[in-house]
Amino acid sequence: MNLNKIYFVSLQITALCLFITMAYMSSVCYKGSRRLTRNYILPTSRSCCLTNSKKPKPATTTDVPSYTSRVSLTNTSEQSRNLKWDQTRLMKKCQVQPNSLLGRFNITKYVTAAEVSNNQTNMKVKYGGVYRPSNCVSEQTVAIIIPYRDREEHLNILVNLLHNILQRQQLQYGIYVVEMALPVQFNRGLLANAGFLNAHSIGNYSCYIIHDVDLIPVNDHNIYKCGSSPKHLSVTNTKFPHGLPYPEYVGGVIALSHEQYIKVNGFSNLFFGWGGEDDDLYKRMEASSMIIERPPVHTGTYIALPHKMDSSNPPNPYRDVLMSQSALRKDRDGITSVQFSRKALEFRTLYTWMLIDCTESEVIQNVGHVKLTQETFMQGKHLEKQPLFNMKRVVKVVQRGKVEP
Ligand code: UD2
Ligand code: MN
Image (cartoon, rainbow, N blue to C red; front, side, top):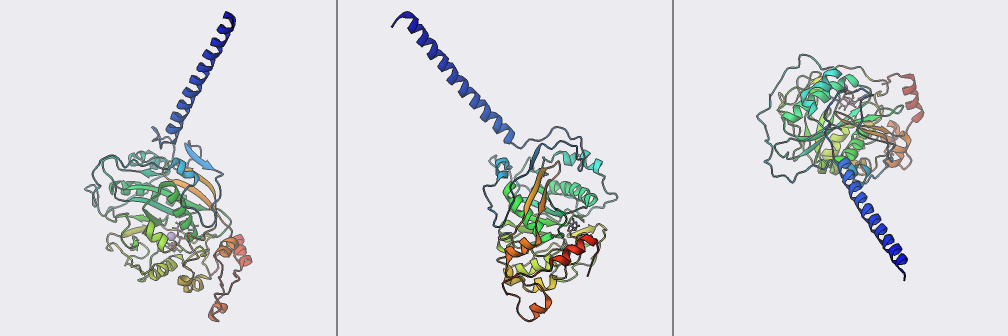
């Protein structure tokens, strides 16, 4: 071996070492930056309003895979940005009735979208509408699920107020707005189920509160937490000022723990159009031997924001028939069989928004064994196999934009 050769070989070895070192360094840097981007970053400034479409969307996922029936509660794409609440820090438990609560308060004027974005309380909220108290550990993690379509003004008012109240209650929470894509008829139960599955996948919450967009709480002693039984929070509102319209009423705002939601199999998916899905939920809870907790009347009180009947949410003519079969259908109609596709998911400034699409015939078929005419039900044939639903009629109602009884 001559000197030249030795020199050449040692040059090669040096180059190889240099290459290996660079490769190692770049892999370390890459992992570090991945870790940073996966953290849930609190934005330093907020210059945009709740509904401004030009605002930056720092954590937006679109074109995500569709959810279909029997959605796995683990291992979905959102878990890669899981909220990673750091509960390891040693902190005292948050108070059950914090001193910061005001009790009954007056609302003299509703906020505008611009005021919502400048509000100091809202500044503490992380993108996606999530919050955690900084000086104590909340006993529960709460997902507020708002079934939604075309009620922007109501949404601004509610979201703004909820952030204020829930922070005073020292809760760890996230707000999820679950919007139904057109042209299918509105389905509050299906949206609640879709919201439950998505919120669970994103934040693994222990408590789920299904909340009408037009009900504004006016007493912060009404604690937004789950109990050992399902908790109906909206006992009175300005439309029903004297308390429950009937004892089984669970419409408006209801809180179910993760276990309770699973036990009743969530809401029925079959209530397209207005009405019945809340009474059906009551029957499911009753069939599961659950009793309903409620706050005192003066605490569980809400303003019902005025609105007209929506053209894409006409009264459901099948609601009584569906309800009468509720307990029989419970185990195969709910979160175990919900059929939808999530068209979009955005972690917006004050809430997480998702767009849910579904096809009525698929939803019904996936539940199976449903017969939906009054005559056949009266004849006791309601458990025959083929699903019956007058799709043509439903589509016509939506196209005409007309409300039919
Ligand atoms: C009552 C119940 C509600 C539900 C409904 C029957 C109360 C206070 N509320 O509400 O919980 O059982 O009857 O289905 O008793 N929505 C939209 N856009 C629409 C249609 C509905 O966002 O186009 C959402 C929204 O969250 C709304 C909720 O669905 O608050 C209930 O619909 P509604 O307000 O039209 O019906 P309402 O007031 O009779
Ligand atoms: Mn309403």
